[in-house]
Amino acid sequence: MPEAMVSQTVDAPPVQARRGLGMLVVMIGVLIAAIDGTIVVLALPAIQHELKISLASVTWVVVAYLLVVTVLATQVGRLGDMYGRVRMYEVGFGIFVLGSVLCAVAWDGPSIIGFRVLQGLGAALVAANSGAVISELYPPEERGRAYGINALGYSLGSVLGVLLGGVIVTYVSWRCIFWINLPIGLVALVLAALVLRDRGERVRRRLDPLGMITLGLGLFAVVWVMTKLAVEPLNAVQVGFLVGGVVLLVAFVFIELRHKEPTLDLSLFRIPTMVPALVAALLQNLASFAVLFLVIMYLQGPRGLTPIDASLLMVPGYLIGAITGPYTGRVADRLGPVIPATAGLGISVIALVIFAQMTITSSLWLPAIGNAVIMVGGSFFYSANSSAVMKAAPAERLGIASGVMRTFASVGMVFSFTLAILVAAFAIPRSTAFAIFVGTASLHGPAAVAFTSGVSVAFYTLTGIMVLAAVLSAIRGRAVRA
Image 1 (cartoon, helix red, strand yellow):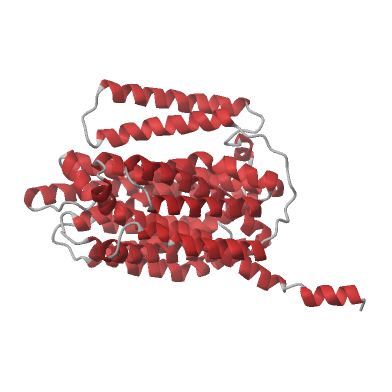
Image 2 (tube, rainbow, N blue to C red; image 1 turned 90 degrees about the horizontal axis):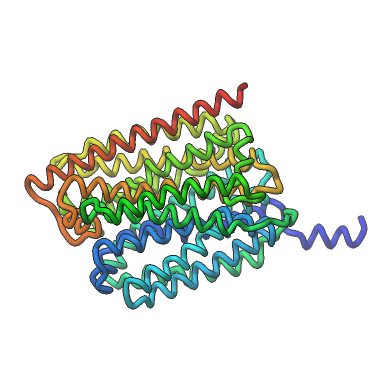
C-alpha cells in the first residue's frame, strides 16, 4: 500500500465517527434553540416585572424572535448554498450567542425585544442550514434516523428549558436564562470548527430583499392586530393594519412569481409530495406550538400552580419524546415518510382531545399525559416529514428547501402563539388573560370555569387543524403511489 494512502487511512477519522461528531454539533444547535424556546416563556413574568414592560408588549419578547426566524429562514438558507452551509451555521451560532449575552444585560422593553431580534437572526441561520448539514453528513437512506436523532436534541432541550426555567427564574434571576447560552454556544462553535466541513457545491444565488420586506411587514401587521385584539376592542387603526398586512402578503406572492430567485421558491412546489409536506408542517406547528402556552395558562390560572410546579408537570412528556425520537426516525427510513408522518399527526390529534378534557376539577395528570402523547406524535411527524422534504429537494438546493420548510413551520408557530392569546382574551377579560399568560395572576370561581371552557374550545379548534394536516399527509401517500 502506498505511503500516502497509509497516512490518509490513519489520519482520517472513520466516516461514522465524523458523522457522529457532526450530528453532535447540530444537536447542540437544536438543543440551545429548544432551551431558549421554553425557558423564555417561563421567564416572562420576571422580565415584565423587572423591566416594567406592559403586558401587551412583553409578548413581543417571544413573537419578535419567531417573526425574524420566519422571514429570514429562506434567505439565510440561500446564503448557505452560496457561501457554505457549515460556515453559515457557525456564523448563526456566533450571532445567537451574542444576542443571548445582550438579552442578559437588557435594560428596558425595547432593548430586550431588539436583542431578541438579533437572537432570531442567529437562530434563523442555524435552523435553515442545520437540515442541509445533516443531508451532507448522511446518505438519503439514513436521513430519517438522523432527523430522529436531531429531534432528540429538541426534546432534551425542551426538558432542560422547562427544568432550568422553573429553577432559574424562581431561585436566581431571569437574566441567567440567557447567560447559560454563552458556554454552550462557545463549545458548539469550537466543535463545529474542528468537525464540520463544507462539502456541497457552492451555487451563486440572488437575494430577494423586496420579497423579504413585504413578507416581514405583512406578517408583522397581521400579528400586531391579533395581539392588539387581545387587549383592546377592534378599531379603525387595527382594521387599517389588517388590510395593509393582507395587501402586502398578496403583493409578496406576485413578487415571488416574477422574481428569478424568490424568497419562497415556487418551483419547489412542482416537486411531487413537496406541497402537502410543507403545508402539513405549517398546520402541525399551528396546532401544536400553542399547546405549551395554553397548558401553562391553565395550570397557573384556574389551577393556581406556581411556574416551577406547572413546568415540572410537563417534564415527563418531553422525556418520553426524547426517548422515542431516534426510533421514530428509523421507522421513517424503513417505511418511507408517509405512514410515520400521518401516524404522528393522528397521535397528536388524540393528544389534543385529551387536553380538551381539562377542567377545574380534573386530575393534574391529564395535561401531563396529553403532553407525553403529543411529544410522541411530534417525534414521528418531524423526522418523517423533514426526511421527505430533503429527499425530494435537488442536491444543489438543499439550503433553499430547508429554509422553505423552516419558513412554513415558523409561520405556523407565530400564528399558533397569537391564537393562544386571542382564545384567552375572548374567554375572560383581556387584562386578566394577559396577567395569567405571564404568570402574574390566577383565577377562581366562575372566571376559572369560563377560562377553562375557552381553553377547551381552543384545543378542539387545534384538533380540527391537526386533522386537516393528517389528511394532507395521507393525500401525499396517494401522490407517491401514483
